[in-house]
Amino acid sequence: MTGLIDTTPPDEQQRYQVRLDVGLDGARRIGASAHLVVWCDGLATEPAPVDALPPHAEVIDARCGAAAAIAQRLLELQAARGERTMVAVVAAGAPVEAPEGIPVEDLLLAGAVIDALGAVGIDATSPEAAAAAAAYQGLRGAVAHMLTASVGGRMLAASEGPAAVTAARARWESSELVVLREFALPA
Image (cartoon, rainbow, N blue to C red):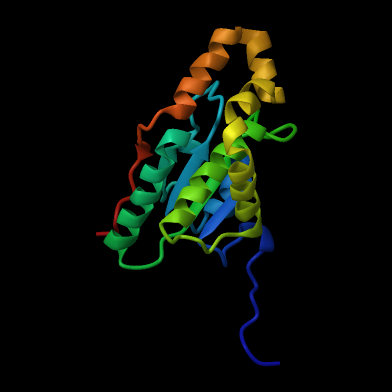
C-alpha cells in the first residue's frame, strides 16, 4: 500500500476547509484545527459561548444578512496568514451544550454562510457543510416561514411571544459583521 493514511478522527472533518457540526461538542470537534469559528444561532436566545469555543480561533456571531461579509473576513484572514484558513461553521442548537432535535433555523443560517463562502471560491466543504448549503439554497425564499414554523421558532413564540420571533428575524436579516473574538497571528 502506498500513500499516507488519514489517521484523524472522521468527525473532526480536518480534510475539509469548511466544516459543519452542531452545538458546543460539535464546535470542539471541528474547531480544534480551525482558524475561524462561525457561530450560527438563528434565534439567539442566549449569547454565543465564546469562552467555551476553541481559544485560538476568531469567533463570529453569524447573521444571514452578513454572510457575504463573513466570507470576505475569511478571505482577509487567509491573506494575512498566507495560507489556507480553516473555518468551523457551527449550528448552535438548543441547548448548546447538548442540542435536542434538529435546529432548522441554525442549519439554514449555517447554510447561508457556507453558500457565501462557496461564492468567493472557498468550496472545499465537508459533506455536512455541503448539505446545509444545499438546504439554504433550496429554501432561500422560505426562510421567514422556517424561522416561525420550526420547532425552535414555535417554542420561542410560546415562551416569549411573537415579538421575540420578529426580533430574531430582524437579527437574522442584519448585515452587521459581529466579530466576538479576533484571530491573532502568532508573534
